[in-house]
Length: 522
Image 1 (cartoon, helix red, strand yellow):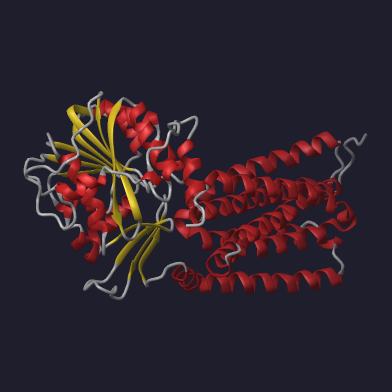
Image 2 (spheres, rainbow, N blue to C red):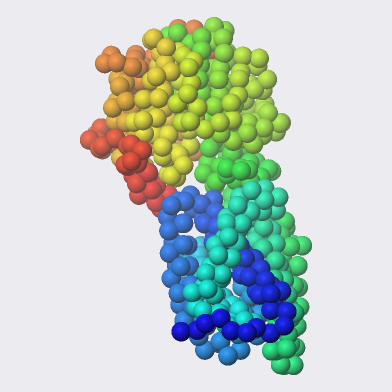
């Protein structure tokens, strides 16, 4: 058993330098992991699945890396420096490389697994080498050395975990944030080896590390300079039409495209995408929004609550009713609302609806807000993103609809955009079942929206008597919806009739499973 032994002069400063390197390297390693998870969540949408793949593969690879590092312990300092340079280069370029694989090569899945494995392999080799380097400064018992290293490692991981969402993402974005971490990683590794352990490096090792440092610096520097152009080119590759606006908010990637004229239409086609999912096409969005809003406006409508719909298009359909006193819009992302207020063509499309004094906007989570809401509403319009992600699946559960029921006034109605009964029938009927189990009587209906295909909605009222599916007598002039179209919308073909599927709940989000399975391949 190894015991503490006399140390060389200046050992305290040298030991502190090693522990500082452990601290910084751990922070960088965790940021690489989080960057891969975040990128996959944005591009693929499956946050839990992406986290499971990345963390599982990286932890496995770290174990392999620890074993691979055993033969390198005789040259621990040089090996550690080489590993840090390699990790800095590959980790710094990981987001760029995976984005390219997604945009051009359609190889994102294999590329993610390969990247996670290589980064995990390099990260796993760090601790054994640092342990050897620490013991060369001052021999300690195994327990003391491990305690010191892991303490620095875990605290560094905390720093990386906090820095990624609160500093790197807001200030630099994903691509440049990874490059910054790569640079920090390289500097930390080289600084330790070239100061505390410089005497252990042969002349050949110094020349090799110097050349490697230049290569890494040039690669990361060039990537930094060209990052904006690369992102613009890669993003455009993902969309059919020219991108006229793109930003990454705290919650999602927001892209607005504008096309040349569509055949048979005089206007250009403005399209909004959130995390790559189409939200509307200006060519036919009126079909969707008229069908969503106007059936629910039959009856009392002084107070209206809109959940989602930060583009202002549902508002456009609500505001022409003069007896609407106030519309409360609850949309999590202020960036979407800001775009709807400022982009000229989008503002024209929504008729500058957010400028109406009757409109109140709350940029909060709808689920959390409903739990404490004390107001009552005559109409609730749930125009929320599809339940194909963990974050949105909770907005299609029995619990969520029960919260909506608690804020409905007597005689109030709820309408829910419910996906496609043709492409995703189990998802659609699970949503309808969830609304019913929350204490509503429902009327399912569907219409054709060319950009989406056959699209469905659920109109509901608390109690056992379903609402009447009809237009208000004083409905404004509409481009698509008529009483005849609405009556036909309540009829489903034999191959897409009602399905007996279970409801979705917080603890069993079945709609998430259905949506992912049914939309795969579309």
